[in-house]
Length: 224
Image (tube, rainbow, N blue to C red; front, side, top):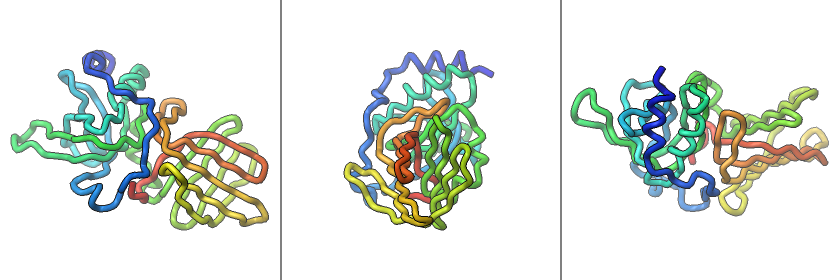
């Protein structure tokens, strides 16, 4: 595997700032997303370029970070683990008329980068609206059309209905008072690092007086 060698070439390219908070508060309707597609796939580096390959296609695209997402900086850091990289992103994909040659990806939004390709096989991803997790103690929150499922270390799973509200700055608040408990999951647009994964939502889970913090990202059922 040539990851370590080829990422050195990518590291020589100009780096974009990858630590800024992301603003999802702007227009995200059909007009704003016109011509853009959300895709998931693998990232590699070749010939000084960052290359994206969709999960379900052998086609390749040269990444141009016109949205200043910081994908090169994030990918270069994670690639030090010498594992394949997975990315969830949105942009305009333009094919190359020359067969066998890569197309162009005009990248606008980066949702997640992590050092694993198993995420391509995650069938639950397509059904989820949001995913969040954290450590100390460990917890996971999954959101879909049926409700909010919370799993905590040392506790039985908790499944509840929820009410969604938009928060200032493009964030999302999911709340429930089921089971005589006040539950609230906050997701705020912000770079968030969790182990071998960088995502762009900071998460806070409140269950009565307990406060748990972590990171999150929108699932495949969520149009962002």
